[in-house]
Image (cartoon, rainbow, N blue to C red; front, side, top):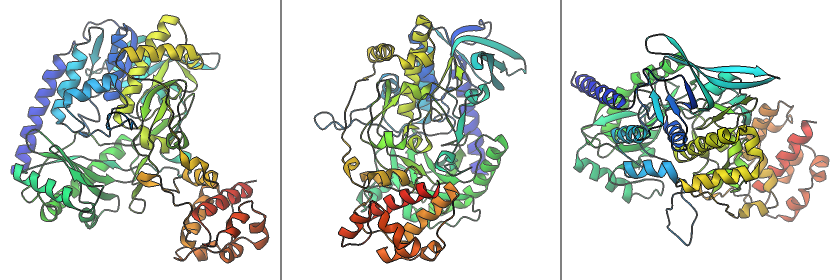
Length: 593
């Protein structure tokens, strides 16, 4: 009963605070229904886009179905930012790559981990300062107004069912879709892939998470948490004054009754009142585009939380007196739609540290693929030093007059594992707002803008004057010189090779029969071709793969015809992982003919 009373009273207090903050921003009652720019979605990316549009002289409307702005941060309680730093050996070790509006926000919340209420106040303050920006919250439904001419669709505005159930129309010269799932773009007819289907895995998405709050943790408890995580032997754990990450081995021992639930190491964010937010609970097989599926996922998590919290209390140092206080208003959804844009960023672009003429943002976060189920618990594909996000990734196929920003922009699913982070999203949002101003001023479509390098240069100049640091760069990728690199790229595109944080794919180390068989079996499922009859006998065989094994799986004649045969013969150590990747690539390509 105590926990429930605290949760309810705190929830009422938070709701009142949100209502007061929302009321302090210019209401939309009596406002006109025509704007230069409409931004749909008030996640951090949408806020950046709306502020950017307003600062570039556009009469801007920011619309959302939620009762408050901030989205993933204020509703999903993601209170720790996955940062992007520049690879600068001659300058600051942790120079932030994406500056501008993101850096304004970052400085006001005072770091990469913060109190959710602080983020809420900062976002509202930033919006309220913009005279050209109006805010419309609590919409029941938002639909695009689309016209078609000569087989091309054009977004003219939005239809909004307001809180009273009335339908209103808002027209605009340009629109930015900053919803988490690219909802407006999809409804307007923009093509997209779902989850990891572009890798060959239909209906597979990264797990969703319900962030929960634990109270009862004293300053002494926090010091204990810091001491344990900062003195263990794991380089991937640690803690500071406001956040902590670790306890993976302890959490892996927790036994879930529901197979759709899992847990990873705890990501812990300390709040100003001493409570902590826990980002760790995974819910599998959730269709994030289905409201009923989201409700079901939430109920599954809520049912498990009492037992999970009790386990944390009994087993995790520093949590002995913790109790469940609240849960986030929304699920943290990592993946859903990936739109098809004028350019789709690939995992090769990310890990080869590519630059583009139409660069508008930069990334450097690892390609982090979270768990999809209990068997596939997630992995790091690789770790870029710096790559550019092209403006073309924001320009959707088939529909004019709009841009898409955020995690559902034009990124392949693996590239999205790095580009989905908030600093990248806010940078693309800022670029989109500025691009809308240029597009209107020059009376040119986004699609044509993206094709003209001199206009992209103008956009970059504007962004730089407004606090960004957009300039060409060159980062070497030594791995590209390896003779087996093309084979690596082939299997990596399907998430079947992991270089982890140091980009070490162990290409020159022996490969096991089990690993070779597992990859070939998965490729067979993806490409739907007949596999060699004997391949399954090697599944689970924990020994190094040999030439005799290859001749048994395929045939001596086929193996000796392969260009990689000379590399195999000259290597006394057996079949290397690099040689195996090349063979797999060749076999799949030949089998698919």
